[in-house]
Image 1 (cartoon, rainbow, N blue to C red):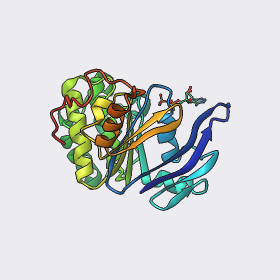
Image 2 (cartoon, helix red, strand yellow; image 1 turned 90 degrees about the vertical axis):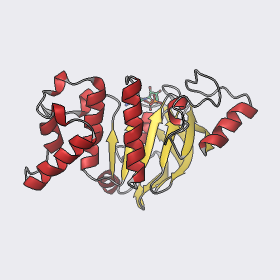
Image 3 (cartoon, helix red, strand yellow; image 1 turned 135 degrees about the horizontal axis):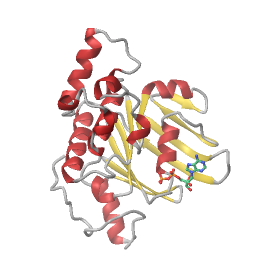
Length: 245
Ligand code: ADP
């Protein structure tokens, strides 16, 4: 569904950010993109979302190529940014979920159903400024899913969430995977991802340092005594979430 081939990218202001990145994400897969701050995760997600085009190399999303048809790529993807406050444009949950849509009975019903799935019905009329960080995060995800994308790109969806918030976010990602959505999810926290995803890609300094099934990435880290370029606080192989996909 997503293929990056030998992709290099630098921002117009200069500075090589991504170098020789090749990776693929199959249709319906949930893939974790991990790496330290500044390793290029957000940049990579923005490229896959069609917000920039590669400086060299190429990427394709559902058969649509960049450089070339970034508009076609944007039609297939939704990206949920790290900072929910930058993404929420409606004044209330209801307004945000219906923003840019004709207010038909069907549109309101779809927004309602999505709000129920995300446990946001109780705050349907609330000004968004009064929502917790976790609720704002969920609202951004709900709004993205309402558009019915083929690919969901999530930038650090767990940051700033407490334990129940993280658990719920994980549940929502698993539900979306079960519904067949293709997802690429970034995190600086390997442990948040390791028992959740189908595959892991570890970015280090804009390059793919490791990639593969989570168990293989873990084995490599153990066998080669690699210090993963991201947070790993409770020890190798410990699954703090108790499995449960
Ligand atoms: P991460 O998401 O892993 O923290 P980023 O993709 O945000 O990493 O950043 C990778 C590198 O690109 C960093 O050195 C950062 O300073 C630089 N960078 C990010 N955004 C821009 C931008 N808009 N213009 C120039 N450089 C940028």
